[in-house]
Length: 121
Image (cartoon, helix red, strand yellow):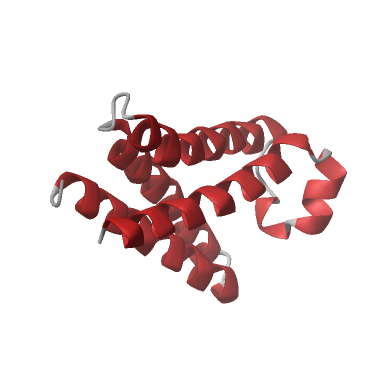
């Protein structure tokens, strides 16, 4: 089970590093062209989400890997689940159903980490 949790954590972390970096470093025009779902959000809000995603990605891996405050790993997963729930809500309101499916998958993976690290540890 531990190997499965590490695989889920690593996959989630990789996804959130990629999406977080994209939102953090891409220009406003590039974001609007590449991620139309972000339309209507200020650049500041998008950058804040990017920081939260990058922090969550680090929190999924580093505390558990180093053994320093491993309780932060499931807490990071909770934070990312909240971000995904809000993202799914936004996609549904805009009728972006394809994006909603991916967001739902990420949302469901995060509580698996929470359950595995809190309940099984």
